[in-house]
Amino acid sequence: MGRKTFWIVIGAVFALILLVGACSAGFVAGQTLTGPGATSVADLPIFMEKEPDSSSMQDGGQPQTQVTQDLDGLFKPFWQAWDLVHEIYVDQPVDEEAMMRGAIKGMMDALGDEHSSYLDPEMLERFNDVLQGAEYEGIGAWVDTTQEYLTIISPMPDSPAEKADLRPGDKVIAINGEDMTGQDGEYARQLVLGPEGTTVRLTILRKGVEEPFEVEVERAAIVTPSVTARMLEDNIGYVELFTFGDSTNEELEKALKELMSQNPAGIVLDLRNNGGGYRDTAIEVASQFIGDGTIMYEEFGDGRKEVFEAKRGGLATDVPLVVLINEGSASASEIVAGAIQDYQRGYLVGMTSFGKGSVQNYIDLDNKQGAVRITIARWLTPLGRQIHSIGLQPDFPVEITEEDLAADHDPQLDQAVKVLLQKLTPPPTPIPSPTPTLTPQP
Image (cartoon, rainbow, N blue to C red; front, side, top):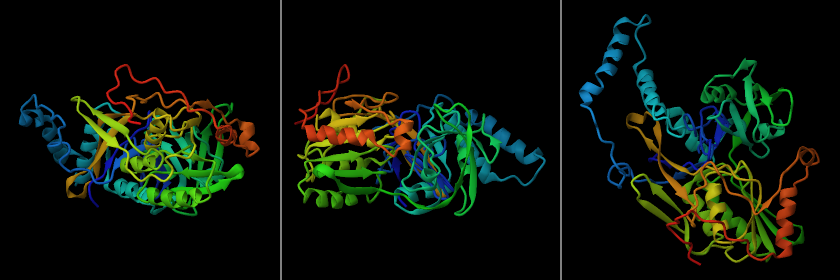
């Protein structure tokens, strides 16, 4: 498997999939890895490049760290500690590979950046599996490992997590009776993982619910979903994206061809609880609805900028459009929704998105020892907006209440359809950054 660059675009978290290993732009709870990743690959939404340049961190213009001390002198205490462990530690022989991996993890932690981390080989494999649509075993939830407690970003459709009524924002404060206070989020995630058919008992702290409560979830074999589509009443097309993986654009093209053949009055693009995925896929998806111009750009620490343009041939560049977002929409989802909003291509309906505006590279290490994730840039919308820790503001804010959930009512979707049927004039242009570098090309 070639090197993968995972561009994470979520504001406090990586959408992690609770896998048996760990994973992506979300992570999935199960036995296979996922992506966005925080401690390990477990941050919220992630954003990845499919075939990054292996020299990108050296010859591609990235500034190299200036060594301010002689390396031999700098690492003398490290090798001294290494030798002491070998000489006097009580349990010999020591596991040198585990020590080496621990040293890499410590180095990434020392950066003080919640989105820079080490991914061991098992976690990297599971992470890739999820975004490639592979099957894994777990509870099927995108989670955030960077907060005080393991936090649910969103359950996957028809997953054990959804059937157990786990919801975005739920905090896992205990697992099988073990208190998670002060525990590392990745440790908690690992406890949730397990084989199909086994059960995990989660103690949940939910906003608006006074007392914590317990939920038992039976793990299952899960295939990461990508796209579903159907026609709604009033001749409205509906497309829901669950992730931005290898096959997402191909599946989206197939769905749009079917919908567009019915001459819909408009399309609802549902990006709620979508934690992200590949950067290139985000560009492809946005290009289905935006015919021309800049989709996003990345800004590096040395001032260098990289521009990503729309690809020609989009299937739904003229049909009226509304995009559904919520607090679980992150990374690649925010890239698509942000571009659509900047171009006044359609309205955003729902709740403020996650807000992940930094960019990470996942780079394979030698000897198949996993990968490191390093924050290298910020990404901005076509108008130069930085959404990190802010998120995208919907044009029509609509909340889903406890009563709505109990009644299986979706007021956000109802509002989206209403907007399309009213054929409203184009939405107002968002306020750009004080000194935007790029302007969308009509």
